[in-house]
Amino acid sequence: MRYLPHTEDDIASMLKEVGAKSLEDIFSAIPEDCRRKNALSLPEPLTEWELNDHMGNLAHIMAVSPEYKVFMGAGSYEHYIPASVSYLLGRSEFSTAYTPYQPEISQGTLQAIYEYQTLACLLLGMEVANASMYDGASALAEALLMAIRISRRQKKVAVSSLIHPLYRRVVQTYFAPTDYEIVELPYLKNGRTDISNLANMNDLAAVAVQSPNFFGCVEDLKIIGEHAHKQKALFVTSFTEPLAYGLFKTPGSQGADIVCGEGQSLGIPRSFGGPGLGMFATKKQYMRNMPGRLIGQTKDKDGKRGFVLTLATREQHIRREKATSNICSNQGLCATTAAMYMASVGGTGMRELAKLNYDKAEYLKAELKKAGFKISFVSPTFNEFVVEFPGKSEAAYKRLLGKKIVAGLSLGTYYPELANHYLLCVTETRSKEDMDELVGELKIKN
Image (cartoon, rainbow, N blue to C red; front, side, top):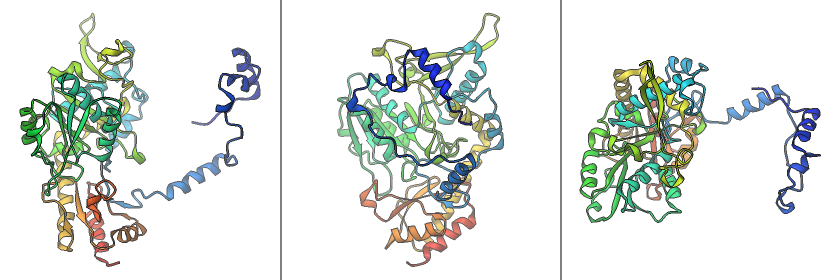
């Protein structure tokens, strides 16, 4: 879109319309001590082609595929996107970020979201899914608040320390102004959540874990769910890599009451961190406590199939004190993308793709073991795992970066006890040659 500036005549006309003599008059209500006295320090303007060159130069300093071989996941994953998704998404009928309010003129968009909800339920093994949340982190926070609403009296939630650190930070932000308590569950030496203290915890509204967790390890959801239910708490499962459920049992089949997470892997480009897709599903009995919106299917007066905004339990629609959430929109375009991706790949394709991700990660894991590196945790993993780089790991990481290889994510920032440990990720986009090159470069001593 080109930038079309206002002319002096345009500005004068608008000022006259609002009854102001100058642009300064518009800001007269703002106290003087709150206004900037000096001009903004901005660079000189560029021509359109100079600006394009400048943006290109900025892009070249970013370590991204295909120029760089990126072995980093940690909640954002590089996957191939079918051409059908890109084509369909470009159609003007779908280019909107919102669930519309006028069902009579928005049947196409409403049906697309309805199909997304159906496919999300199938993928996660749940009975009902909403029209999407902002992202995986906000979906988890909303899930825990939902569990507290359902339990009514309990105001304590147990959260695994192996849930994505940034997700846990968002939960803390949501809970900070409340009197709700967050209890963090530690992790075991095998890379799974330690639930041994659950039996000693009273007044729990929910127990939340992530699988595959932040270390890439697959949690035993069935056992954790049984322990949560013994405490009369809801079992909340989170995820950052939904593709894993093409290979492993669904959270719903393992006893989950609420399933939430990030759907970026389902056809959405990484795009330097956004946008994302907050997937959210639950059991039918908890439907009216679910945040966000729900698209339903109905019939019109002529008996033809139609789609409507069935539930919208938010403060803009009902009395604020009865709202389940203040979420104002859903990620409509991203949810539509995910539906297109799941429909294009299909159930068989999801299984094959998940198996490919699993096999490639296992190959890299085995090659690193042969090269003398220690795999930190013995639990089964999906497409990422933790490896320890002995010695001066930062120097090795920088040397690899100089060779255009991004060797995972350093865990020391989030888990100080895991200094020199790196989270490596392999998806279908990484070739055997890429992995062999990584191992070969790591063998070189600094």
